[in-house]
Amino acid sequence: MINADFRVEPADYRTDFQDLRRVRETVFVLEQKVPEEEEWDELDPRCHHVIARDADNRPIGTGRLTPERKIGRMAVLPEWRGRGVGDALLRALLEQARALGWPEVGLNAQVQAIDFYARHGFQPYGERFMEAGIEHQAMRRRLEPLATPERPPAKPRGPSVPVRDTEGPGDVADACLALVRAARREIVLLSRDLEPTVFGQPALVEAFKQFAIAGRGGTVRVLLLEPGAVQGQGHPLLLLAQRMSSVFQFRAPTDDVDLQYPSAYLANDADGFLFRSLGSRWEGDWSPAHPARCRQLLEHFGRVWERSRPCTEFRALGI
Image (cartoon, rainbow, N blue to C red):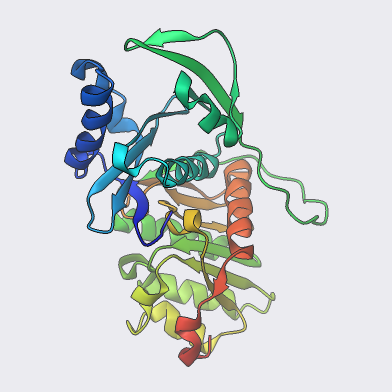
């Protein structure tokens, strides 16, 4: 969530550790008397973390998604409670879980927080239990995708191709190149700022050009979280879009949760996808044909696209 007082953003466990620690030790160790050795576990380096910061960039709240598909370590500093920080953290984590394709997410709620999680669709199950000396209730929530407009019957899907990892910009550029070349009539891209290291590569720009001039009525839809960062760069892909404005469409999210979406991805209509859970990093996974993962990303993209605005920043380019 973004407002005049605070924002929520993805956190990198290594680089943001001290800020995560300030919040979690204040809330759990000092306030709730959780033993420090129980607060930090072996899951932390493998989790997706989010952090809330105030207008002066100071940490005020945290949360994480574990590999076990659970939300945890939700903490907000006392002076910031009741101001929407917890809601914003939870919405960001739920959106991330949905983007990862999880059908369900769980958590262990402290009993005084049960009503808070219930407002966000979580249901209790099982008996209450003690954890770190505090009474808890297990809760869970289904993550069905939102309803989408009816489409013509889908064509038969082919078998999935095993997912491959990306580790650097070269891997990401190669994956994008393969996906653009394989696309038939649709490419969708969600990026923070159209990373020039990848999307400025001549071979990839040429692949987009060939897609655009193929005469199949194709479209390239791009969601940019920070269009102002791209404006005025002379970005090669923007220059191509300027010449082929009937093919390229750009929008910018306006919803608070969408603006704090931590990931980046590209997907096509041939069941191929590339997904990086942290858009600021190159590590990710991709497949030239994985119907289930691709469909989840296309559905997420469609929801965000519908509630986003045109990129007026590019109006001078005729886009």
